[in-house]
Length: 434
Ligand SMILES: Cc1ncc(COP(=O)(O)O)c(C=O)c1O
Image 1: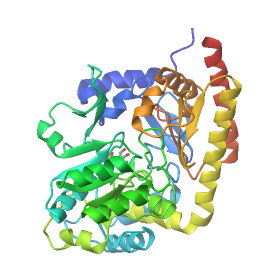
Image 2 (image 1 turned 90 degrees about the horizontal axis):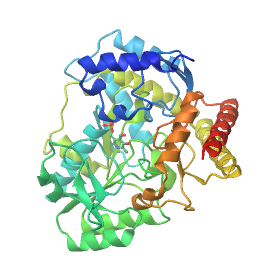
Image 3 (image 1 turned 60 degrees about the vertical axis):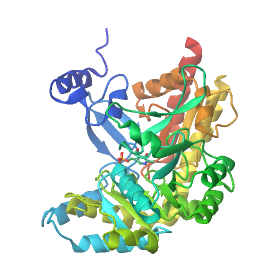
Image 4 (image 1 turned 180 degrees about the horizontal axis):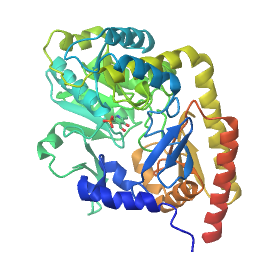
């Protein structure tokens, strides 16, 4: 009998469970298939697990590794800068240098403030919106994710009694009072936002991923973001774009550059620092002034430490330098993958839906022609998706299990050919089994 392919990972997971709660450091990693996996190396498009299996990586660590793993220029900059000091409980010049670059690049960023994680930045943006408007509620959309903090970690679930979708708490320990502070609406439906803003004077902010990356990679309907923009201005509500995934990925200036609509406040993270923990709340001057004048307090011991600033400076400088060639290339390669996967699955009689802008995209099995909101996601056959993701993993291609693919700047045309050939083998195996 062949030895178990993920034996060392399995052993380490068992060891980890003895000293790490749940064997992991982030809840979502418990969902790893076939069990939480352990990795030891990453370079360019490739990662290697502790059993020595190599993968073409499309998880990109949930998005951050846009430049590929271990980019030498990023690592060199970090090495040089952090050798002089790591953290000073004060400012550093690197902070100004990075902020200058970002305010030039990001469409609605007159001022910025750094944090460590996307959740952190979202939390700051909500507090700012509440302070700026004197209102208490945040309007979010079904299927969008803005971090794990109490006041936003809510979504809808179908009621067990068949009573339709209900907003629910997503974790034990979350105060039920947040249900009174967050309104959750279906996305891509402007009328329902209009009605809600007309009816509820307590809405401080509307927050949206400008492209709904966290479920099915859904693009906004034409006019939808423009409509949100108009409604928010009309009702004195702060419009927050969560660009933690789209930022630096779909264009250098994120979805706001790509789609041409600007938010009042925006949050960024992930790809801006190549795997180092840096995030950002950015916005137009009148909105950011509440941090500048101290009306709103945002803080953090580790904020803007030297290694993350260095990693971000190097990453954003590379993206800026190469943007004219890099963004069309990752879009083109992503779209080639999307079309190739779709064609090969259909040829094997599998109804695979592939959607997204290219630099990231989603695959799922459904007979629907397109998925436009979270509720339609219920139509996906998650069992088949699991077979695809695990079949790919066993053959050296790693994607995010729920069907999300991130394309890196290190990906080549040859990689795309390899992945398509591999996917075809998996599709063939899936049809044979069904
Ligand atoms: C759109 C979006 N916003 C916010 C977050 C939270 O970021 P972090 O995990 O860095 O706290 C995530 C994380 O995946 C995300 O996808």
